[in-house]
Amino acid sequence: MKFKEIKQRTPILKAKQERRAIMNWIDISEEYTLQVAQLIGMIDAGERRMYEYGEQDEEFHGFLCNKMLVNEKETVIGVISAQNYSDYLHISVCFKEDLPTEAYDVTRVLLCELISAASGNTRIWSRRENVNLISLLYDMYQVKPDFASREMSISKKEFKKWERPSILSDYVMREYEAEHHMDYINLLDINMWHVTEPGTHPYLDDAKYLETYFHELSLQKRFHALWKQERLIGICYTDGREIDTIVVDEMERGKDLGYYLLYTGLESVFKNNEYDLFLYVVDGNNNALGFYQHCGMRCTAHSVRICV
Image 1 (cartoon, one colour):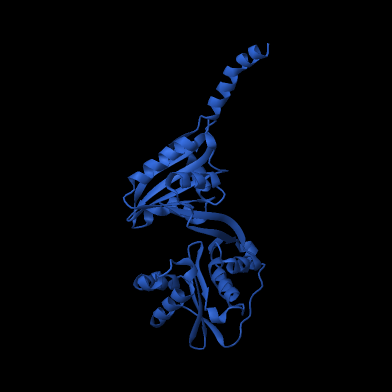
Image 2 (spheres, helix red, strand yellow):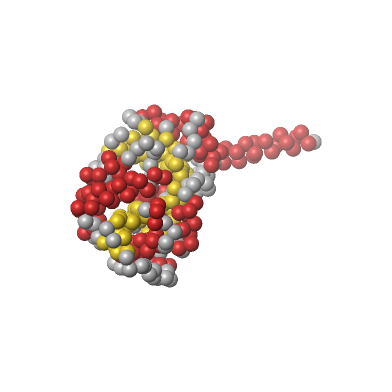
């Protein structure tokens, strides 16, 4: 009798398993464009910006793939967007929860095809919470995340509650000045070591480009330099919705100068804009993380990069 009951139930169980396994990567249709952008935004705001406006970058050479993972109810549970740049392939991959075990094989095949088609290295960005995906990539290529950062955000409403900082009389905030361009570059090169690869000098290498970039930001009132008499102490500049960089000379830290720079940068943007602003804190930089949390910023994302 028991054997007969099991035999009768077997087709039903098999049908349920098949239904659970119906997960496919399909092209993103227009009706899902906003939903997919919001899902990519769960990685961080920067990834969403690249997905929506990447075509404006002169190094962008088109999308290699834009697909979403749907279940049998056509609910979107994941997204993969692969963007070709001059010397690398950029892949944004995100799942609402995590990579479902039922989708391991189809995801493995898709990622393998994309990475194989890349003419250079591949950079994959995802949420730190997508541990199944990270495990899958390790199984495929024996690679682990080599960079991780937390997105910290602030709204205009929240900022209005911040206390206006006071500053000692011998400190002064100034706009960008072309004659001091190399002072800015040297300060960044010496004090931003935590976001650069050892032995590299990206700020010095890009000094010419940054001269134009800083000048453009200055015209928008988005570049601020803090001086103590004739010595450069700190810099804060914003671009779009992002607080791109904030740095204080190591010898001057612990004097609330970082808060003064941050406040000045936020105030200049919120004066004419309503959108939230954000910045990124590299994992391991606990002092910076604690500083921004103490100021009143929220952690809205935790992203990781995996290079193949």
